[in-house]
Length: 191
Image (cartoon, rainbow, N blue to C red; front, side, top):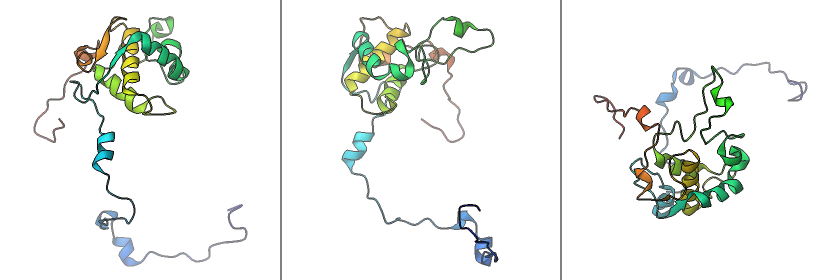
């Protein structure tokens, strides 16, 4: 109690009332309104509804090339992911064959090139969460360029390939075959 209230010592315990002792949190009704905030407008919801599905639905208009993405990466991403995306405080994004990944007993880092099953996830994640210090600040065009750069750096697409909303979903990720679709039936289904 040092520093809280010098000299104060509670002498009486305050018992819960019988109704509070037997009342479960599950039985306390949730208020209809809490008295603050307002409903979101359609425009606000539309601005936040930017998810991209594995089939490409939700991809915005735009195009990207690895050469342009390399410059953006060096400026906005390398501080966390290292030069070329091979590792830093934010982790590696690019699969390498260096001795550090070949150490016996050490699993290689999960990167875009060896773990991610869908290419559209790269676009979606970068668009929403990067860069770390300003998530969501990249333009759609910058995200296309960065996605192209990361795919090229992982050896998945050619350096001169142009990715768009039409071409990106056609890229097959090396790890896609390692994932099994959840097609269970008879319970809550998520589709």
